[in-house]
Image 1 (cartoon, rainbow over the protein chains, first blue to last red):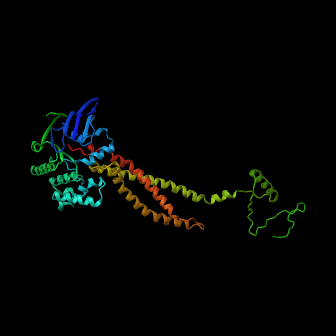
Image 2 (image 1 turned 180 degrees about the horizontal axis):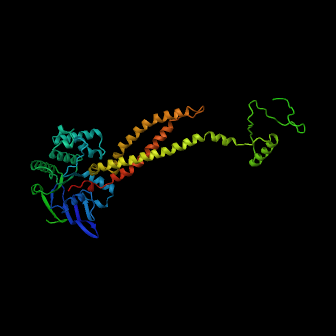
Image 3 (image 1 turned 60 degrees about the horizontal axis):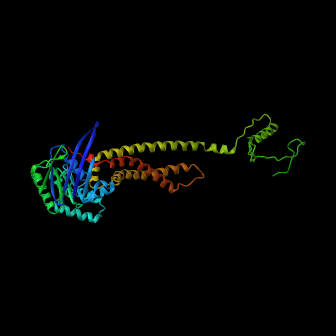
Length: 220
Length: 202
């Protein structure tokens, strides 16, 4: 599903190159649950952004579901990631001015889904995560764990094939973190490919594979 | 019309005479057709000197006089346009500030929405919508006021033009276009920001 070849990313600072990613070669198949680990500054988030097509590397090739991502035009690329990739963030990044319902609904607005279908999909999602009672609350009224749940619900509403999670349990306590990881395992069983960046060994263990990054390169 | 009578010396033929029934003001109006205006003026001046020696010779052209009547209105018109342009400019400054502020407040939200699939067009529309609504409200307030003011002003004239509806439609369109142009500069800039930068969490 994902093939990264000779991916490099650098910033030129004062004439010298500062590498964020060095010679990344990765193959991730569909249905895997992969954990990317590494200390701060090892390039984990940058790698995730490249995989999620939010950012471009300086060099290298990336095939997503068989398509050569960098040869695509901006518009086609955004169509691609819009359709197939869902993001979960450490800081949840919910929109505070919108209710839980509206937050979960938001991706659908950019996918040209009509109103009645949107209602059905959101209701379904609320039900699945058992947060129907909270649908009119605002993110600031929810606990961290609940906010992350909403974040994941929002990422899933478009039925993506791939979920990219950047430290999804980073702001949660251990119990909440466990609930999220169980949820991920469940989703993975249902066929969703999940790539998570994490600090915690415990969370990483949920994955079928662990990739270690150090200073922008894959260690093992 | 009266029978010819000799009012000048008998040496001259009875020429056409205009008798005006009013107080003496020494004014007559002449319609003429000539290519040599200054020649004609001197000719008239000479006749005047002969017939009414000692009286000062003043002349003016009626179209100038006519224009002069409206000099005040034209001046008012110019002043109005100047102030209108000034007011619009200041309003645009205000709009520009508003949209810049809004965009800055919502940097994170814009980043999130882009990750969720919003295009630059979607974000621009979102930012513009609220401000355009305000412009429409201001149009609703301004139209009756403008109409009332025009009406009062036109009442001073015996012959007046109509205040047609398309004046308001046209003004409204121009106002919205100016507002949109001002808003889009900043909105597009904000909408084009890369989410990677907007959503940094360290």
